[in-house]
Length: 509
Image (cartoon, rainbow, N blue to C red; front, side, top):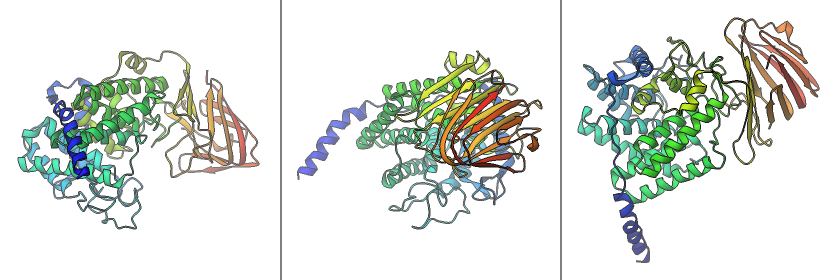
């Protein structure tokens, strides 16, 4: 009886809060209203979606070989939902019908059995085996598809509710509820997992308002406040400086600023979005068209050669000859991230004027220092011809071939015109820091650097000197020994038994 009274009291207290929330307002974007750069990106996205679309499967085919590390199968469920959003935005003859077929197919790939860890998420591909209790997260299922697909459904329901049938609308609302229930049940998400935490916070808020669920509304508001307070400690996201995942952060923050149910949510979304753009542009060198490391999570070392989500955002405000974005073909690395473009076209790119100026013109050499959390500090030197960075972790983080963490990086433009790079690929727990002359690295064990540069000559590499095309690095260390290992288009320099290293970079000024 006491418990029931407490529940009634909680609902009564929460009802005014629920009533005060606003239903998201559509932005009513149409392709003819898009600016030139955004329009080009949107059309490119739709072209390659159509190129890979399989009308028999009603899904977009993966551009990767099925056996590659990038692909779990022949078809892509998440990316197909993105294509459906693009079709509804374009709204040409036959687009609504195709979008409906895709959405029906995607919805059928959701795991709807309560009580399992993967409840509410989706198969990455129809070919993926159903998980079992022995299935390992990330290998056998991806819980984050709940939010990538769920937020896409939310955008459809906000922007184009009359372009889908009532039956599809009901199914998408239900799928969003299952995604939220599944995430709450699994309990694996933390506010510091930035890109997913932001999408989850928006989706939870959206579902709460639609369902008139006062408990969810309070819980989602508390969650979003935790994410905001964590950011405000150092004006930095814990998942720091990622050319891919910071782009997803910008997406989540744009959802906050446009569709958040309260003025406070929209306000903190706009504040964090502007802050993230300003932070990214501290590391950006427009002549090299790259963001300097260190990278907490990165899929590549050259934004001119793969589709990064930050690069995609930047392409919406920069023309193709100046954006950190690759030429597109069926084999472009990470091409599927291009299919995120309809979301950006609808939400619009909001870059502060001072950050936009740095995006367009190099404003001079400078040192960057940013506290990430209580233990971690990122530093970078952004020079005229070379950029490099290091992350001091208080030896709380290591790097390995299965991680996306690159604690020390160097990038420059080679005489061929392409970007050369060095990344600290593998090491035990590490502290790395940059100054205007080079990098200092402290660790304990085996350290592997990967070097890629057009015209790289392995004979010009030694333990103490890296004579690279366009830049020279002097390596001083206490390593017991070293070796060179050549790959297809790179050379690894491996130091064993190393505790301390100084990389002096000539050409840094």
